[in-house]
Structures are given as structure tokens and as C-alpha cells.
Image (cartoon, rainbow, N blue to C red):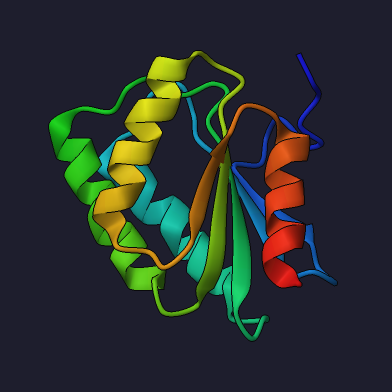
Length: 130
């Protein structure tokens, strides 16, 4: 397994300040309250950028409940105007990738991609930035 370059204690942090990249590491299971807290932090950190990119680490995540999925849609709607591209990586099987794709399609974000590895997600952001 590839090391994600993310301190274990931080769920949301600036990943690369020069490139306006924030990383969000989804815990094994999440609640609406945790999503609220995490997306508030994403919003707070993104205020320092004129548009930003979001890496989403789902390596520890499990399949969200229908209520949690709905809350994810609502949270992405709040950052939709300022996030330039969301690159998700799972290091998991195709089923999690398909579930992530399904969820992201419903967020109506203009640009997102799903990857198996962190490096692939980083490359997708780099390609989008060009």
C-alpha cells in the first residue's frame, strides 16, 4: 500500500499550498456531524485560494448509508463554485470506485476523477491545472 503523505491525526489539511490542493481523508465510517465539521474545514482552508483542488482519500472508507450519501451531495453543493477538480483515490476494488463514481455524478461538480492510487489522483489534478 502506498503511503498517503497525510498525518494520521489530520482528516482535512492543505496538501500543497502552491498548487491550491486540499486533502480530505475519509474515516472508516462517517456521520453527518463529521461531514459538517470536515466540510467546514475544507471551506475555511479554501478561502485562502482563488479556486482550489480537492484530493479525497477513501482508502479507509466504507460504503456510506443512504442518509450519509445525501448529506455528501449537500456538502459538495456548498463548495461546488470554488472547487476546480476533485480527484478521489481508493486503493480498493472496482466496487468502491463505482460507488464513488455514482456519488460524484450526483454532486453535479464540473470536474472529478476516480483513481486507485494517490499518484494517479495527483496526476489528474496536474493535468486539469494545465
